[in-house]
Image: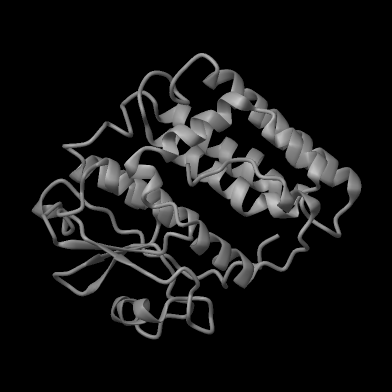
Length: 277
């Protein structure tokens, strides 16, 4: 179980437009990403950034795995937040897309950042947000957020109601069953081509194994491992440079242990994936 998230503060949600009239428009090296790879939102952005080949177009600054400010933010980001919002009332958190021309923040909203990277800068990479697939990708996103991550969190609550934990585990296993059936007959979660849905699912599976597993009982983890097509898919994507090069298991562990308030359970000793191979 993770610690409560930092106090909610207003997020920055400007978008990259098509031309100069939009204010923020696509220009090489105008923008910079500030990411902590131990954060799942940042990891999704880092993978997308690499898939699209944007290393020279949108530079990246990597932040410490564990936020170093007392309020749960990053000290390195505080000047950007203060320049963008006078006396900003909360932590300076990642991810951040900043504008070098103005020295201010464009966006801290990961879904918007992902779409703008793909649609405004991603001409050389795969089409991660193909037209017509929006509803299908939204289904996978909800499945990841609610039926995998959310359910795994509830299933590992040490002081929760046993009936509620069992129901949460059933929800988690049902979601994994559905995905395993899909991946038994197709290469990617939506079919024959890699999309944002695969980035979403892969990071969710990384979190399930490296974070949520530690609070599940051994019997529950054994049932989670019983989805061979799904975990083979996770290992296959981990071997892709755009995915695996950003997977810092030590950083994820340090972030988890720094903020976790839950009790470690027997499932922590049951490995699911050897991500290093």
